Length: 272
Image (cartoon, rainbow, N blue to C red; front, side, top):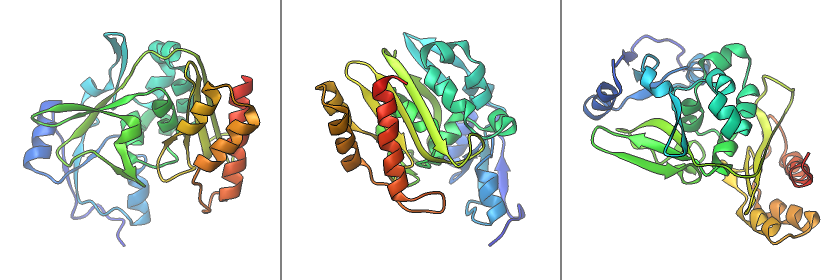
């Protein structure tokens, strides 16, 4: 176990093009930006990577804009950027709400939405929002760009479809119609890792996504279908209970996570 930076290398590209060329020609490299998760692993002595690609100075990846009716959020947009963005607050207010729940001001100023997505923790606060909003991850390599739905981006616990030569450059969110809902439940009201996090859109059809209740962020497809056919709240809760796969860990128990998720579903359905 080592917490030293000795023996580790850091490459600093001056452009996105140069960053993609470095991933292709000098890999394997671990991209980094705000480092709010990476430094935790370093301090705990669990950081295995030794060669890194510093993206922090690539301002092109911080842009938040609308292109062809689609909200495009650069991977280096920080939580503070999301909170302050008029576009985010108007088009996806539940994402601004999620950003306000992440850590303290220092973490919000450094942590990026791209890092939250690629880190692939099932407890990531922004992931249920992106999943419920049918967002896509934009992955670029030196030769190609592809788009992957966020719900298909994760293949398992902390595993994604991103290739070693690819960089997450943006998240794209189509127009969202319907009341938006976000709720995070943790040990404290702030600066706590989520025990359960849920995002929902009361549209036609309804959409529901949850974090910390399965190995990856999940869309509750069967529960969505139940609500779409106007099933009772009790039936929808029974359906959701069957879809969840929570675990016991240091932060909570599977039973608690399941009960909280069902209560959040009731809040969402009742419009609270």
